[in-house]
Length: 81
Image 1 (cartoon, rainbow, N blue to C red):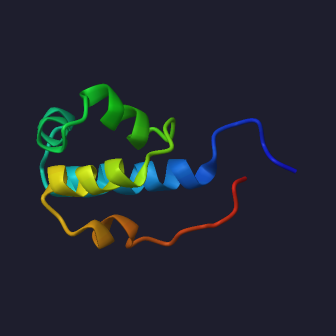
Image 2 (cartoon, helix red, strand yellow):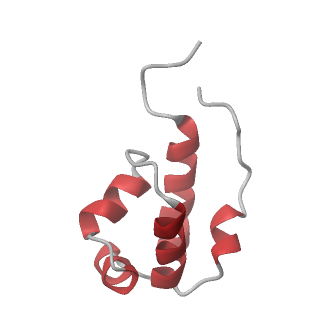
């Protein structure tokens, strides 16, 4: 049965993204500016409120200055709930 709440996969990815950003000492503003996204977009992704497109995924990696595969280097739970 699917939960009516947030998709936990998005929450996990957002948390991982936030950890990388903070580890690199970058602000949401900096990442947004360098990835052609808005600070609001970054916040929505980090909070698990936005399912991003592949192109957005690549832009995030560019904005963080990292290889895109680093964004997938965390334990991924494939279950939605």
